[in-house]
Image (cartoon, rainbow, N blue to C red):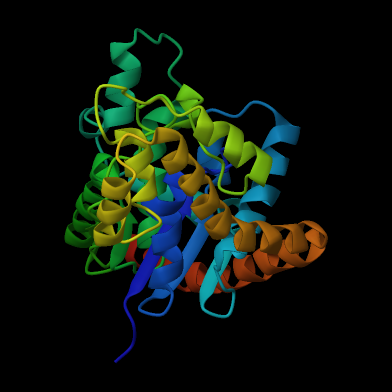
Length: 316
């Protein structure tokens, strides 16, 4: 039996942190053996927020290198850039014609923008869910790994597929979200690790940076266990092992932080070194991206040929 198709996309939005890795990046690499995996850089989606050409270009390059460094394999996954497959935007337009404005007004991102009083909401932000639906449906995607907060995008893709299928005949596979039980990973200040809070531990941090950040983790002196340190440590060691260590070092916050520093360095050093190898040969990384785009485009072209036939514009 052929493998199910799994698709995941990520915006080129700057340096990843360990929360990103354990939240999604690690899962994408693990899924490669189980599914036919498509991984794309959502550079057109990024245009809803990016206004700096140079920054966008650099982040696209960085994200390719980041994922290759953690083990995304072009022999197992199709790695590509959204803008290299024009069928994404073509299909999004077709979906525009079968979707009502009242339906899209329920999208979380749009509602959030309205709630903040934004008077300059772009059409791109409003239509964002339909471009995402096109991303997913072009490849007969069965599985979309996502967090609970992004589940709506998969639901919109399913609804859109059903609308199209009902109107024009069976064409698109209905995707299912694959939601993992991911713990909230705290940053140095105890809040959720997030770039917007500036409380992250970069995924490819050097040793001195790791040491400085971990020693700066906020701890509560009223308890025997530094909860924020423990929560991060859980990502790196088995629970039973950690409980024993933290019981033996009860109240010794400095020693526990030093142990976390060493464990983070053991985890980060190999992927940091692999990333440096790709940094020295950016052309090789971009060639992988370009070749992946060609593979994805062949699949997308075949699906769009079917779509054009279904809607009646293919007359030759």
